[in-house]
Image (cartoon, rainbow, N blue to C red; front, side, top):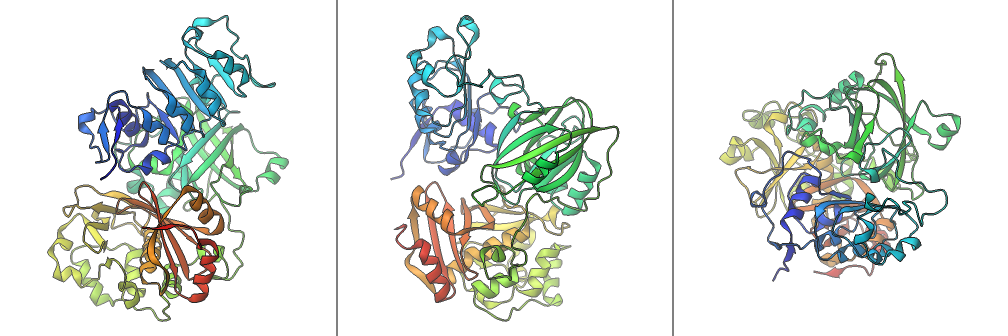
Length: 577
């Protein structure tokens, strides 16, 4: 029997506003980095009756314990709420900023259990208990103004200062000189002034309509109405906002550098995850707003690879803003990339970096152990064009060069072939060009009909919904989806695998996977209602980690040598399902 968790309806609403979607899987909780009860993102507030709760949740008044499952939460701001039990806080060990000023919080002993805490805002002194703990905290703390005589900065380490206007803890926008923490799921960061972009319709999918095709991105970058850069991965980023241009020391310390520009109106610049653009809303949280005078700005963006060796692992990005009289001339033809591949000269297949650069044809040869690839003829593809025209260039290329290769069809799920469009009416009449079907037909991946003119369109997925009423973004481009889907399906065809195939992973075991294998630059979101990431240490092996609330993994290799190399990391970890 599935375990059920209680949740206060207010927390359900907060999660929806902070993430932009309803809570679906237990693992969604662990992905949250920020929770602000006042946040008004993604349209007006909805009633709890309007939100569809998953089967593992039930409404339970005054139960906020699930906040404790947000183990990666860095910022928590609660306002105008009375909670009976705040013990969930001790499980949020990543918290760096905590705002409880307008709550019923009282027991300061809980704060001593938060090792990453840097700033905390507390209710009036008369409400607090065990205040002696505050003197032992190595963080900045501030008590609500009712006790003005209480020293606001008491107990803080030497050199600390009270929150300045523009710091995240003060609830005000950032200023040049401030630092921000940003967690992203997409592979890029966007910046724009909401006043400049006020013509965009709220709720529209700006990402897929105007900011997916590289040429479109390049046009916006050069125009400066909205700008962005590709980080190469999702993850955790530390943004330093500075004025002017970097000096020679800064250029040496942060050698990966690009130059952009943007127009600012209304005195502020918003910044956030690329995926934010899926559901346009300029109402950013305060910690993602930079206060800037109106005008044109040259932006120098520079970074370096983190010491861990992984992009997106608490990666520092410096953004220098220099005000100009007019918009500078930029030459970006497409997407600016803020990362480097140090091993570009390494032959493909001789290392993990080489593998990251493989195209889908090389992936098929290596993961499916085939030498010759087969594609469809123009005449055969014309069958599809009778119903979906034009075809995206990347999809048509795949069909012509490799999609007829029999090895890729002897897998778990079913790739759609051009001839299927003559057999099945439902393929022809929908708003999505379906490209892959789960083996029981309960999950489909497809390209929106209105995106067919894009060279490399996003791919969406629907579960248990033949009519396609609810589709979710699965991958930002068809190219990424193709690589991820080929890798996922290959695991079911590998001749070398461990008996049991699918295994549970603990968090510690997941750390072994992450440290011993190279994460691949592609993934699948919401396939079978799971998020999938991919890891490998040879050109013909693959481990697929599936996050469905718990962590599951399946892995194998196309050769015995590749399998042995994989087992150097995977041996002894995981419990058979």
